[in-house]
Image (cartoon, rainbow, N blue to C red; front, top):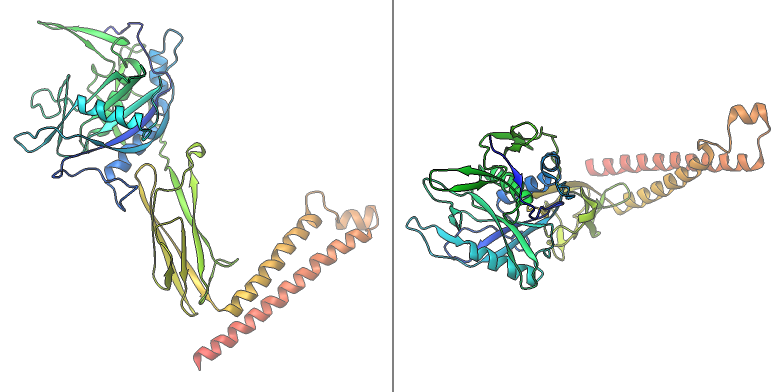
Amino acid sequence: MPNFTYGSGKLISRPEVSAIFANVTDPGLTNWVNPYNQPLTSPDVCRITSFLRDLVDSPFMDLIGQEYSVGGVYIGRGTFMGTFFAPVAAGSQTVAELTEVADADIRRMLDAEITNGRIPAANNNSCYFVFLPINTVSVSPFGRSDSPSASVAGYHSAFQLASGQHVYYAVIAYDAIASAYTVSHELAELVTNPEGFGWQAPRITASSVINEEIADVCTELASFHGENISQFWSRSLGRCSAPADDGRHKPFARGSIVGGTCLGHAIEGVPLNLSLREDFTEPAQQQPFPFYLWSTTDGTITGSNSQPQFVVVPPAAPGTIQVSVLTIDQLGCSQTISREFRIVTRDEAAREDRFCGLIKRLQTTATIVFRPDPLWDPLRDFITRPVTRHDIEAIEIVARAMHEVAQLLKEDQAARYSDGRKRQS
């Protein structure tokens, strides 16, 4: 049974996690695609970052905190800081034509990106997770990711900037199947032993003493957030453990297309001004989507189709047009949002405006008359006290508005019937 002890070193209490996808500067390599510049990105970007964002703010961190908080430092849930893409200088190629990425290459990239402000600034809680693309090999002081006997799929380490600030990071070799296992493994060890003087357990071999970290001693998998994650050693239970799945799967943002007449229609020949309303899961990270690609089944597009706003001139009524927008959010997740608009004539649109104006007025006056403490209550006002002139005036306003709505509906019905007869003839 491993005996984990704390060596009085640094612990990361509230990890601020950034996901960094390394684009290796090798022209023959298939890199991650940057969603800020391209319409598509690897589905792995979305899957990995969504998982990491949820993991850092989950019972996984609660359990680590219960087992390994010490010395007045409580390890708890953290914050996902975003998804970023960064260039990494290429190393030599292996016989299998895989590009080597050394630990020194990773450190130079992180130093440059932090210094130039392209990724969040480093502080004592910052954790940078660097993901290597397919057809690369991670080469670190701990081993190679392509080693047939003892491959190192992930590792974590630290270095100092010129300012003296420590940078804590993990490197994850490309593995679309086991990445969640490796990510959870490195996160557990990064927060409990970021500099090599935190929580460790010695393992004595014939030739040396190896200091193992809390996930090194566990090989069992656990299901969490739809992925297989690493367990870690539970000091209280005396065995490997993982939290129960809390079922928390949250998209970063959802969007909906807004625009059209008050009833949501398009007017023939009149520019239809649309925009994407973004509903964010995390208000603290509200930012516009970095990518938009609008399209329509009919009509004439005016202006750009790659901005949050979109304008299309519908054809003649009757008919419908469908407008869609492909977006990519800050996690690298793509989604297509669509909405269908019925095309109406200008006369129909004018009737709609009148109708909506009446309904708005009716809603306002009805709220005054029939609110929870009403100005007029039949039982009260005919039995308890006489109705006042003000009560009667308010009721008459509602009645007139209702009468106008009824008349407008009759006019609309007659106009539709007339239009239908014209089309048939």
